[in-house]
Image (cartoon, rainbow, N blue to C red; front, side):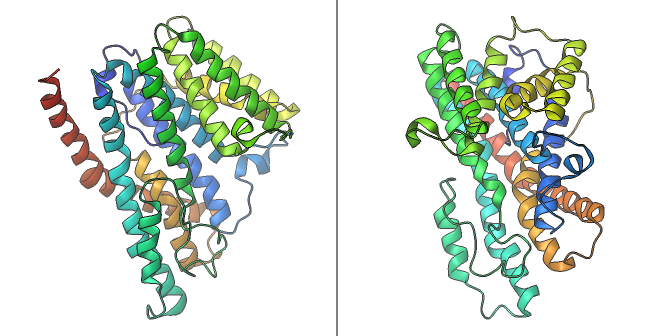
Length: 363
């Protein structure tokens, strides 16, 4: 949730790059807000759900995650179309995610977590440094297997994970693999009906899951609702790219979809069709924006905000007004995201371009 626009795709994809830069930033902040209420001990409902009398469940964080996956489905499918070989596609995706992710693991394990422990205990003598090492080792392949580091979170409001945001990175890798295999098999060009069938399969599972019907073999049912949301949204984004010449929605159409979303929230049914609604709104609704963002901080904000919010809770407890806590969460996350982008993500994107030139010379 976390992918910058592949600039090599601009010849084929007709979209406003600056609009999607802004959109990713907004989606990342949505996630920070929802996590902030949970981690800061302010309750589990974010502000819109508290204010509005929705019949359907609503979360800014869920909108953020589904929006990220929808946008990734659109842009990564475009990226594959422009890649001159599967190899280029693979290292483009890995170079965009893995370096920043590994750096986040190290910072969380050896800076943020010990700091939380030090504030709680006034000493580091009892800190489980071996747990910091195992945290990196167990999670280095993106599929998160260790969520905590010793007893770091023993007095935290949310004790389940030092960085719960990382759950979505493995599903994103799975989605990239789907795009790679689907592109090789031609489902984005010559066998588009297969793409539609994939979407119908995951959408049907999503509807079944959100309706409370969980019967069936796990391998078929895919009972993890978060991953179902992610996969359904991603494939929906892919479809909107593949059929971009056939699906044309102007601002009036976006407003109609937005009204439909609000009505489904108010009277029910939103959860079942949310991947489609969110995909349509974010991909077609932000094209008019021209605000230029020099640095793409969305990935850094997403992966660092959770442990930083854990740290802020330990420093301030529940004494801060929620808006102040959220402001500090976003501000500190932006600062760390800037360093991540400037000194880790950007160098690897430049390295990617250098490798591109060498590989293309042999193609």
